[in-house]
Length: 295
Image 1 (spheres, rainbow, N blue to C red):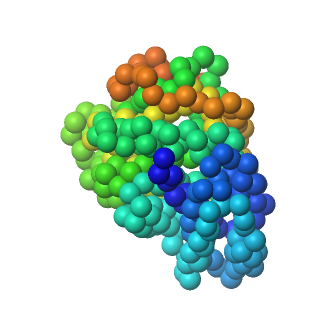
Image 2: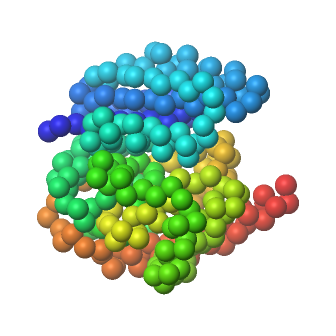
């Protein structure tokens, strides 16, 4: 199997980076995997020392087939850093596994990602592979498809990433023209449209909402695992875009996720589970918003 390169995006959180790397080092296939680390430049003098601390640690990383560190001289910001880095890797290697510096992975994450990227590589209906699953109460199938894309431990191919549209205005106009706004918001259960509007107005810099919109507008599917292979430790107010919340905390699977053998179409039951989960966390998200407004 041709293993996909791993693209890891880091900034100034050395403690989170260490945990992310240490969990990856416990993965199967890690010794045969190439790791590309994109280290964004400091946004201000206040961040410079923390960025340098991260970069000193990156020099010590072992266990991978090869580690390449790309140090940005200036601050690109998360969105531009990921867009540029993913584009560079898929153009060179044809496929990529993408992680940020706050994602703990199961020892079976790389196996699942590589097997799925290989299994669905020639199926134009599938745009990406995702490794995280919400802490839902419902029993999920081993794997399932949902239209769109996602952003916490994911992978794609060059053919998939070529569909990414960076212009939020174009995406929003097309969602409205095709009457897909409610579907984009998971039946009105989550305000993705508002997130896209805020990206357009400069209130956030989300690449992920544009990636999701791009995939949905192209009627593409993303594969999800029925047990999460990723846990995000960045929802602790340490990052630029995440509030302090526990609603996304999930148990990492301690066994492999089997790939293949399912219909390549959106799973309506899984879609309903996602919608119900979004509705269940809405009060907590509003509390977080009020907390920030008070600040």
